[in-house]
Image 1 (cartoon, one colour):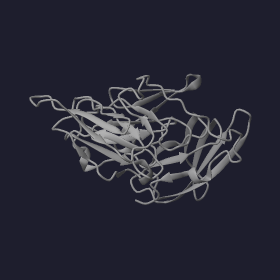
Image 2 (image 1 turned 90 degrees about the vertical axis):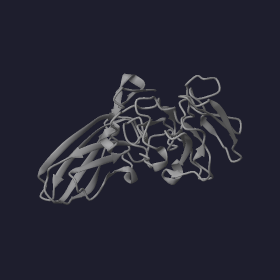
Image 3 (image 1 turned 135 degrees about the horizontal axis):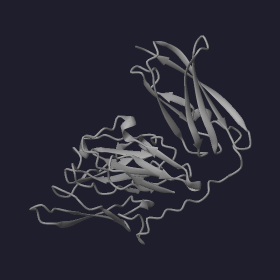
Amino acid sequence: VVAALTSYGKLLWLLPGGAVRDSDPADYGVEEQTPVASSPALVDLDRDGFLDAVFMIGSTLVAFTQNGAMVDGFPIRDPVLGEGYGGALPPRPLVAALTDSGSPSVLVATSSGSLAAFDVGRRGALVPGFPLPVSRSIYTTPRLAGSSLYAVGGGFQEPERLTGWRLDNLGDVVWGGLYGNVQNTSFVSLEPVAGGETSASLLDEAETYNWPNPIREGRTFLRFRTGEDAEVSIMIVDLAGALVDELDAGSVRGGVPTELEWRTDAPSGVYFARVTATTASGREESRLIRMAIIR
C-alpha cells in the first residue's frame, strides 16, 4: 500500500492489484486557503487490521481509511493547533500509545511552537499534560525514542534548541519519527486479522448508515463496510418508491470503511438508500438506510 499527497492536499492510495482511490479533505469541510499538507504517517488507527493515513492539512488533523472514508473521531480542529503553517511544510505526525484508552494517540507540532497530542480512542480529546511548549516555531518532525520525546525548535532569528521530555506512560510507538521506525524504512507491516474466514454478513449493519441525518444542507455521507472485497452500488428512492439518485462506489476493499458523499436538491421528506454489495463469486447482500431531508 502506498499513500501520496498532491499539492492540493488530496490523498491518493495505490492499493494491491493496482487500484487507485482518492480522499479529499475538502469533502469533509477541510478547506484551507493554503492547502499545504504534512507527509502522511501510515498506521492502523482504528485497529481493523488495515493501514490508515494521518496528516496535517493547514490547521486541521485528518485521517483516512484506504477506501477514502474519514476515520472515526476525525477531522480534529482544536485551537491549540494554531492557524496552520502557511506555505511551509508541517512536520509529520507521530503515533504512539500515550493514554490508557487502549487506542493510539496522534502527536503533532503546532504552528505556535508546541507539541499537542490527541487520543483517538476518546474521539480526538487532548491528551492530559499536552500541549508541551518548545519554542516559537517547530519546523522538524519530533522524535519518540525509548521513553523520551524530543523536539527541535527555533530558527528564523531564534536560536535553535533541543528539548526533551520523559514520558512515563509511553506505550507502543507505532510511528516514532520522520520515516516511521528506528531504521527509517517508512515501512509498516501488519499482522493478519485473526479469523480470516468469510464474514457471516457481507454488509456490516453497524457500519451501514449516513451522516448527518437528518440532512439539512442537501449534503450527507453514506458510510458502509463490507466483509469481503466487493462492488458496491447505492440506489436512493423516496417514500413512493420513485428513483431519486444512484451512486456507484466501484470496487472496495473488504473490512475497510468506505464513504460516498451525496449532494441533492430533493425536497424535505423521508428517503431510503439501498446499499448493495456484490462479490466476485456472486455473493450479494443489501441493506436499507432511512434518511430524512429537512429544508
